[in-house]
Image 1 (cartoon, rainbow, N blue to C red):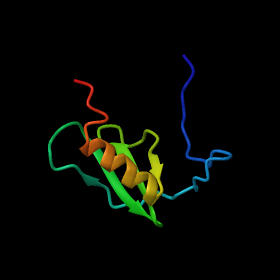
Image 2: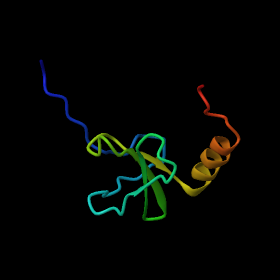
Image 3: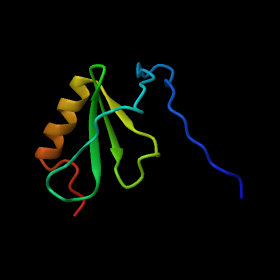
Image 4: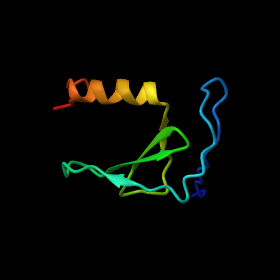
Amino acid sequence: MAERTTSQRTLAGWGKPELDLSNADWQSGSQGRGDVQIAFVEGFIAMRNGSRPGSPSLIFNPGEWRAFVLGARDGEFDLT
């Protein structure tokens, strides 16, 4: 089985920067649901799976983050 590696890179047309997350101050959610962590880096918000910190992170600009948080509060992502 081939070894799988991931790297962070800018996706053409997405306007997402290559952020160095190696020294990011990751914060865990306080609700105890899942293991999502966020970090504020260079004016962007990075989100990752805290139980798999080496996996790729999602990068949001402030407007995208606001839309995501408002959608989550409104139950937009409730899969139950």
